[in-house]
Length: 105
Image (cartoon, rainbow, N blue to C red; front, side):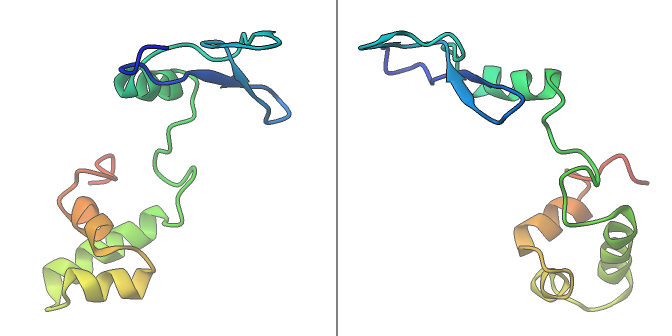
């Protein structure tokens, strides 16, 4: 296996990860395929497995709006806002700067 390639796989309905990229002693695993991080991200987006909005998040649209309100209208630090909402200050920064949750105005 080339070192510059990541293992790619599929996940069936039961949650089984199936390799299609590598030969094993007992034969070829057909579920994973070689790729890199960019292809992996593209694959999860195409298959609808990328979190967006409230789908896989602990936050809601309302909480995100409150976080942005707190930052704009109080002296709360990113750490304090993160503590209030149970998220990392880096996540708070991404939300407030609209790198994430950008679909909200």
